[in-house]
Length: 467
Ligand code: URP
Ligand code: ZN
Ligand code: ZN
Image 1: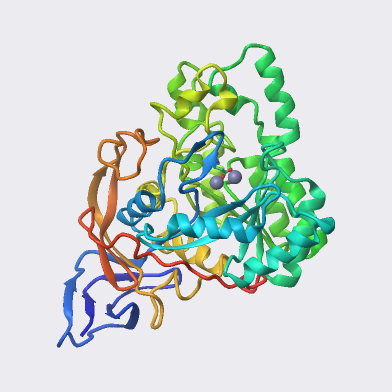
Image 2: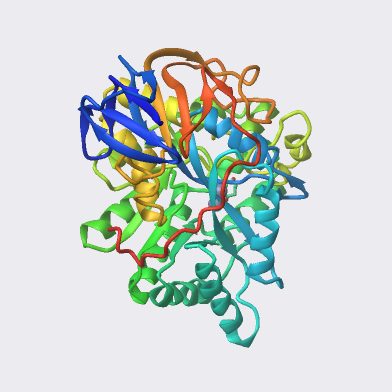
């Protein structure tokens, strides 16, 4: 006895068909027209889309930043994700300077244990390669790969906190030639930005907008260019996280045109929000939009959409990292450098991309599935267990109502954050039913699954074999 999803339109990255989907246990057993319903629980998906659950490859639950913690933990954050149709996240463990990666992995798995509502993987943020000229850290990377941590993030920004030097980046890249992992880069020239920031503060420029104005797009483009050059020398792929500007995109496109395996994600905030609209420099409310890289001028938005259409950008994730306005963001009332960097978004990614991408005619339905689910599954070593609707895959399925109207608001969202970046935005298209490993976890906007049922995902390090 299984669950039979009948009469829906099945959409994957490579096909769209009228077919039934039979779920047995935690996996998809059959996908074809006219499956015999006898003995199964039937779900009528007439007029609805049946798609692989979303994969958000960039979230920060329960993450320390600037003396505070991101407001969502693995319970509230993954529950909100599920309600929005996302069935997998890949979060970031942080190896702090002087500590071992295994300790960080243990800490982050303990944060998720008993709380995660959907399956989750972990990237490892590397801040220090440790003793023996980095040998200890490089061995730790191999150890992490054996634990299913198939990707690492390195920072070119946040000097004295998370930033690493080019030698560290290069060594880590070289190590992935041996262990098959993927390096993800936070690409902003932190040293140059720091000089500009100090000059701004000295001039009395302390308002939130100066966070954006002190981080030029060229500082992003330079770091993207450097990341790609270092990866090219090491002979490995590289993945740029939260790419925000045309200048940075041009670096990725130029490299890809030369056949270099450079990959990049952007986020809904860069596609839809701008300095002009959200940060006119008028009030401290603008702290709600302080994250890094920052919001850009509006002219960047069509370039990023174009990048998604032409596969210069492969993924849209959220960089979900919420800090409440009423208390946490206030830390920077008199100094924008003290505003915790990050904003909420994990719940709204599919709604926003569907409405402003698919409904607006900017991207096809199949491309929507690809950039929100299939590509991150492939790139981060989860495919075809995750990221598609196929026999043998995990039954992570979102049944999507393309006509559902939804008003985005902090007063109704499920993220533990007192504001939404998209407050009052009306979108058409929303998750109606969400299955995670065959279990119905969301029905009509309500989470009905168990707490802590989400499993840790051991991801495969494929050395770029997914290209
Ligand atoms: O401002 C941001 N993006 N906060 C989260 C940390 C990061 O760099 O991704
Ligand atoms: Zn980052
Ligand atoms: Zn991030």
